[in-house]
Amino acid sequence: MTLHSVRFFCLWALALVLPFTASAKQPSLAPSLPDGAIGFVELSNLGEIVKSVKDSQAVKWALTTDEWKKFESSPEYLKANAAKSWAELMLGGNLWDASADLLSGRIAVALYPGEGTGSQPTGVAILHLDESKALERGRDLLKPLLGTAGKTVDTSAVWPGSNTWSVKDQAFVSINGGWVVAAQHRALLDRTLALLGNAKDKPAALATQENFASMERGLGEEHHARVWVNTATIKKSLGDRFGLPKKAEDGMASFIFGGLIELADRSPFAAATLDVRKNEVEGILTIAGDPAKLPEPAPLWYVQYPENGVIPLPKTPGTLFGFTMHRKLGQWYRQRDQLLADRLLPAFDTFETGIANLLPQKDFGQDILPLIGDNFTIVSAMQDYKHLDGAPGIKLPAFAAIFDLPKPAEGTDTFALFFQTLGAILNLNAGQESRQPSVMDTEMYNDTKLSYSRFLSKPKGDRLALAYNFQPAAASVGRKYILSSSVQLCRDLIDHFKKPESSQWQNRNSEMVVDFAGLAKLAELNEGFLRSQDIQKGTAPDAAEKRVGLLIKLLQQFDTLRYHSNADGGMFKMNLKLGWK
Image (cartoon, rainbow, N blue to C red; front, side, top):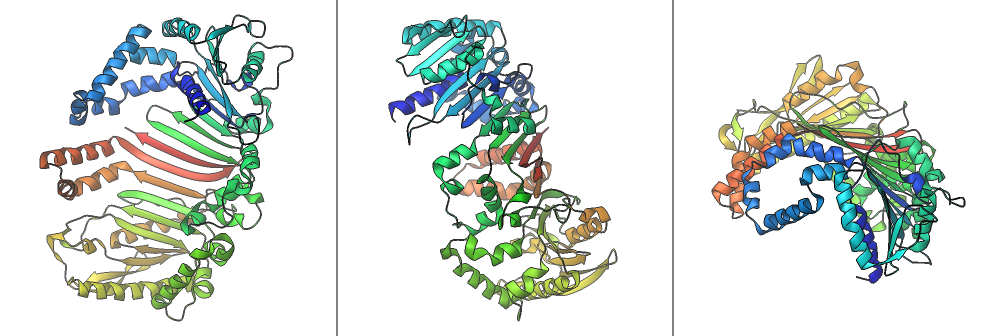
């Protein structure tokens, strides 16, 4: 590691380990940083998070687990506890309380282009802390250390009342009351102090930089954490598409994420925020730019609302997971020569040959793709195994894929043909594996024809093969075609799509929900299997039982994980929210 890298690491470490900072009561530190930055991080009001973590049920539960008790006797814990005791001695109080006091202000770190071509970025960090006994104690400890490690620099003319030290002319630290400033270079320090001291010839502030100000207008400044990246400046250094090849090396990555690269390549900035509340944490990643204004082929990845969008995720009994996404599959497939690396293209020929075996006399590109819409949805839910006289040894949830059909009649016929062919293939596999054969059957449910695979006689046993989790079913409701692994889930989805509002477009590019309570129930149903898998890996039976129990309890501590993405106010936002009990 080079000396420059060491200095760079020390600057970041200093910014992060000094009184961590933050208060929504204090204004943002962006007006105190010089303009021209390529990156910015600000933390705010972390004292609230410390208090929330200390009092949370999850932490109280974790401290009662056998794993924690075992950790308490480990060398790592003893070292950590010794460090905690030393910190409490230095800070003059309980570490939880001292941390909450110290984390009551703000911290900001900004990066700037280095001097010369190919040079590494240089940085400056600012901490603005609320006055407290812990801060006073920390300041009294820090000043002698800096005086020993470096030499005094007079900056009082620029920032009255400041005390500044230079550490081998490679790092500079200035303290003034509840303020701490650290920089790698003297010139950057002087520009920052000029802003803090409101000097007559002070430079322009980062807050006035247009692509930064645009971020603040769109996202606000009151967040526990926020990050801003000057993508336009970074692109100048890395080149078009940030140095990424024009043709993707991974087909799935291109289909899912290709639009983000196209947007970021034309974006003035990207940003992220993080907020922690009583029972949830929310993060938002933002890329500046309006997807509707992107040139071809970028629009294939984005919604053109209200012409299209994604449907609301179905809420069926026992739902575990749901995901819906908007993509113009047909356009992406037809333009694969321009979007994907040449080495990936032969795989599409193989794929089309396989489709031709399932759907005879049907060309995938000409006959099938035009029948598939731009909204794809997947859901998963618990199932009851009423189609069995027993249960599988490994209990899987039911799954369903939901397709939008621009031409419902033609699309339904094509999917019905696929479903019949699938049933024949599954029967052949059943015969090869000595499982119960099945026949195709239909029923009318809620005025809808439901096709499904019915066993000739109910399979019996408490530890049936994995394949008995599946009883394929299919149905068409309006523009939606349902392909499910369970008759009951198919019925539930029919009920759902009979409601007119279930098929109304949302102005979202994608959406996902994960239910942890359902996952905990699924883990409980498969507790014996999970335990046996752990034992096979060499874990003692008692330990395996405790580990599986811990996994279930851990899942029970969480509520839901939610994600959605959409264009909003000239920005594309990706929102992730995790809730706990």
